[in-house]
Amino acid sequence: MLGANCCYRRIRFEKSPIGPDRIAVCYKDDYAQDPGFRRGLPATNDFRRLPDPDPESAAPCSG
Image (cartoon, rainbow, N blue to C red):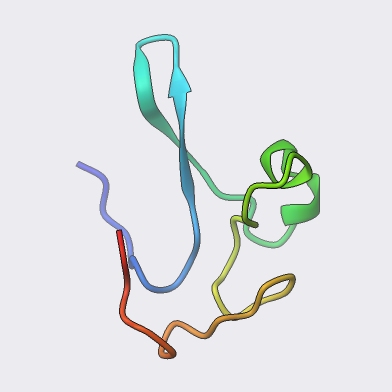
């Protein structure tokens, strides 16, 4: 089981050799180095930080 604060940091799940959505990806402070971000996916960092600031208190979590 993976536990986390769902409203603090953006992450994404990627496939692994054993199946889809098995790897949690988060670049935290260095989102610009994220290959997914470079391909146009959302940044995997804190919701309130650049490049797309959206404070965690602005809206309910979805997911």
